[in-house]
Amino acid sequence: MTTQFRDRTEAGKLLATQLTTYANLQDVLVLALPRGGVPVAFEVARALHAPLDVMVVRKLGVPRQEELAMGAIATGGVRILNTDVVQFLNIPGEVIDKIAAQEQQELERRERLYRGDRPAYDVQGRTVILVDDGIATGATMHAAVAALKQRQPARIVIAVPTAAPSTCDEFAAEVDELVCVMRPEPFIAVGYWYRQFSQTSDEEVRSLLEQANQGLSTTQRKSKRAPGTGTSQKKQARATPPVKQVKAV
Image (cartoon, rainbow, N blue to C red; front, side, top):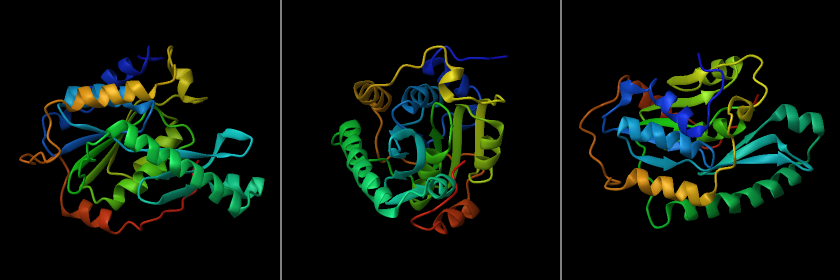
């Protein structure tokens, strides 16, 4: 029984063993939350023989307590607020707007940096496996899911090496499937469950994306369907509002 991952590479390989149902299916796309989710997702994409792209999300940190998330933003104008934190600390709307504008600039910078001239993959009608190195507060993952649903995938699978049991239950009700290797209680923090948890650099993200997508086309045909995809999931995705405000745990 795994009690701690050696690093993100090992975590990604172990995570991939629980996703073999999605191997070699041409409508599967792996999306990573940068930066730490990219080394994990790289191993998943390689094992499943699936293309890899990024879902850029930025945390909205509380002023002078930046590690505490009051929400997150994602591509497509999605903003998720942790209403408990905002109300408890009485954070004014103009402060949230200012921080969100700053993070929007960084979000756009990262998208340009990571992809270069390569366009984003079209997710409509595809099975998307959304990968991070773990889920802590859940703010960034909530924003990623909300942004992803706007783009009308057929099926959304969250795949992470570790998260708290309560967090897994919360997200399992929000997407089609959740896969988590280790669900420790108490959870403490994502980095606690890795022996090596150094920061992933922008250069590493770019390199892994380039390696993962060598020889792959952005207009891959979908000759095989992943399990569970169908009309009901597509209808559910289309019904998702453009901006979603949720209470992040």
